[in-house]
Image (cartoon, rainbow, N blue to C red):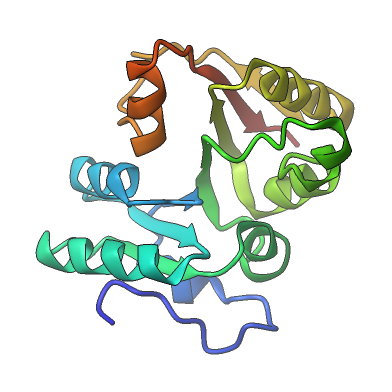
Length: 195
């Protein structure tokens, strides 16, 4: 399907050339959902390449159709689980920005081990980011935000940056639009890889 990225092998780390064209910056949207954020970013930044990662087949097909209709040659979607992609597929120092927008907060304490933001995940994020690359995390769940901040501090190899709503172009996700309509606040965490 057009717009879909299918790796040649799911059990080997990708080569940078499979993802990045002519040294263009690559941004990755983990859990791209309906693709709204991915496509708006691709339209706004035609000089960059974008990879959306989504595990649900129906969503991947819909996003691929939208990408094709909009003729976005700089956006593709990979159907796979986000953590696996970061830990096992993405090449080292290949991603300029990695976005995690509105992930499942797993609010019950007994489920916290299922949260994406763990120290091991942050180590993998740092490995795939280019030097000076950024990791952006957003949630409507204050406790998960505090958890994420604590994990970043525990890991200790990211520099925290200011991220106001108007700091730079960053379109809203479908979940962000829904939750802001319900009066919820969005919590933002922006970090830069430091060596």
